[in-house]
Length: 190
Image (cartoon, rainbow, N blue to C red):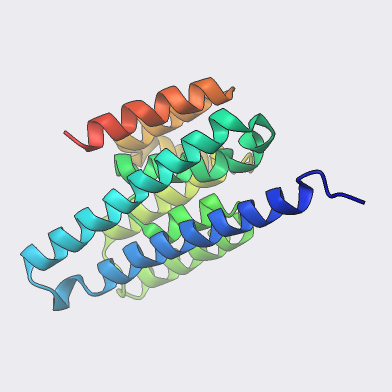
């Protein structure tokens, strides 16, 4: 009996997730090697990676426009790409975990950040930035935040994260996803 596209859709989704993982890993590796690269090489490599994300997004937009059954499954990837391009999130690992919808791993990373800050392995500024990114991602994934987490998020959230949260809350249909993503790509390429 024919799969009627089910197997093909599953394989396509798997391929898209693998490509997104590869690009997010590329960003993570680049950030880790930032100190070893000269500024020009770092900026050039980062620009190439962002360009690849834009191309990935264009292909994703075409798929969403042509096959509405994939919209819900690909919506998480769309938001992750939007976040990466708009730089609302500055930590590629958080983007990757958000795209893969892994709240447990995000919570684990949040605990690691708190520990690393207490022992002096992570600066307070970086700990705040990454904690806010994780809390925002958890909130967008529908996780319940404790009152202290909500207060922390309100106190430390940046303008770009608030804008990401507002825009992503407005996304309901494939057309809204395309409109928002298109505006983010246009802003990123200026």
